[in-house]
Length: 435
Image (cartoon, rainbow, N blue to C red; front, top):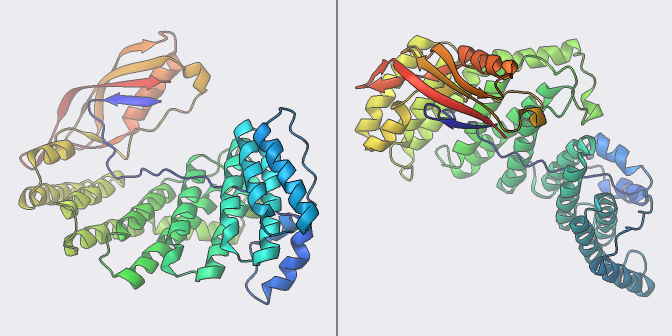
């Protein structure tokens, strides 16, 4: 569903493009090499070791002919005859073959070829070789295409482990993989990929916190790179605060997470994170303000804009008086710090749903080419009133109209401001378009 909205702005920046990087198990032939190469080091994730014990089945031949794939197969056979099954350079040909198979949509066979390339790379370059990362990343693409979520989570964790073995967990070179994995966990929660979704939130929270620690220790407490990780913490703590339990029919992605029933220890763990979610999110936003204020390279009025986020945070947690006071301070700070009239108008010139009006969960096909146009007012306290359905298509789709009305009744808004004071806004028109 897209929203054509004259009133709505996404206010607290919970916008994440979670790249779901998923990959599959490795071959049984490498198990002995794994055991000898670990050398008493910390082992990779248990689920990955379990996957490694599975035999590597010979992939079925692709039915559709592909000259590129056949050329790679011929070259691989030649190299195997000359250098043996684990000859250096064969892995590169296998990557080419896997890429060709991906383009054909033959993802199962592509995964098998990438797995074999990983095995050969490890034999020649060692268990911890980072040259296997591109092979895993290409497997990820095929895993996404096949919706193989269970292996996905395990192997995403394996990528983290592999980089940590090379760099150390708190090395700044870990930041890209931490960002990838934290975004994956957050997106997995949003997309409900798991039976214990709160584990995704906790993992994402810990990873964003790790990123904050690494950046602070290596680049300083006011480095602008902190902002992205801190906004990640803000997002996970918002979702922790609004967590309402697991879905009734969740899709299992990781059996290591256990079943849907929480043990006392797991329940206590969740309760601890949820109990601290408001204060943790507030701390993250306050730190964003501090970073912007103390870093001379910050964008103009960035700290004042971050203060608006703090006001939004109070509003979402029903702390109206704190929100009102913070909005007033932010409004004045925007003027004092050189924000343009247009920037201030974009923030305070119209009501903004917090964090954004949620999508309606219903069959996409049934909603195709449907819309609901609604009129409503937003009070100075950020509540929708006088909700009226103007038009809808199809006209007999009563459930969509009712759910749009319910969404607006429950929504929280940053109210419109005039001269630093919140005011009521009447006659807002919003169109929900379903595609």
